[in-house]
Image 1: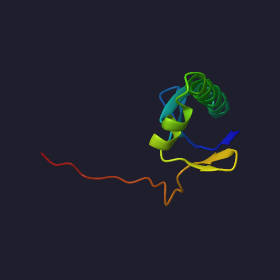
Image 2: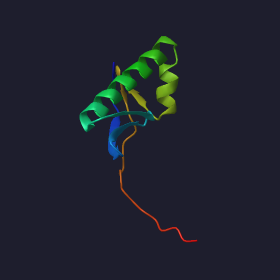
Image 3: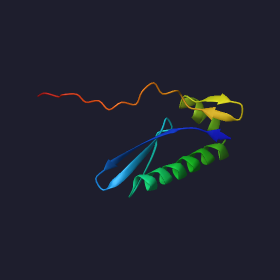
Image 4: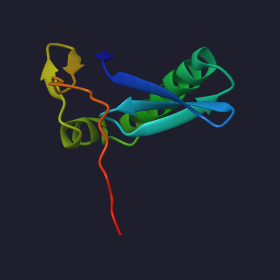
Length: 89
């Protein structure tokens, strides 16, 4: 079964952080590739554990996934944007 997800990676201090959306799973590494690899492993372990416990379908549906044949399709992204705001006071 294939379960797709989007990964956002950013630098935080000396580490790189990877956030697997919409599963909300984060991991880190010393390089973008290490963070990506750690994220993939964390996602796989999380989903395997959910499957073993019989809750995979409920977890994916709660995250907005839709079943399609033997795959699960993540919610369609409209935009991933960098924004800012000004705080006074």
